[in-house]
Length: 127
Image (cartoon, rainbow, N blue to C red; front, side):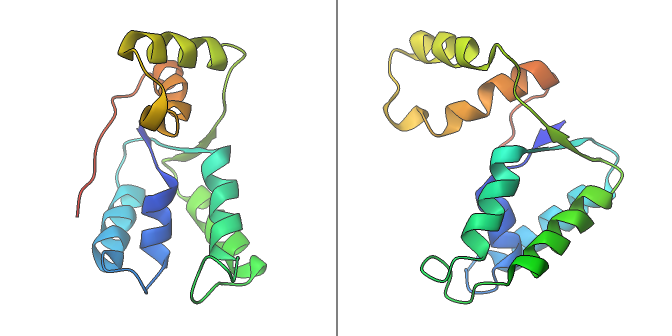
């Protein structure tokens, strides 16, 4: 399973960013593949918040468009909403303890428990 990061989805829909076309193509290819795609609630809600916010986006989209976009992603066969478990915090603490620091790892640590419970391998996408 691939767990998709919010930034990638924003790049895929925001034509104002330099990596838009590459991100859009990558995301569309993911939707066509057979490998499962996990969309955490924090990512979907972040997408709604950021893409519709005029102080964040140079050309924000309206709520209905953002909502329809999410609906279209969820309609593809490989996508599913993934949720945290009651062990989420324990897993985050364990992994941060193993690294010896929180600092810059804290934002990405929200995905670690999802990766562990969904049995997926982290992937890095660069453009």
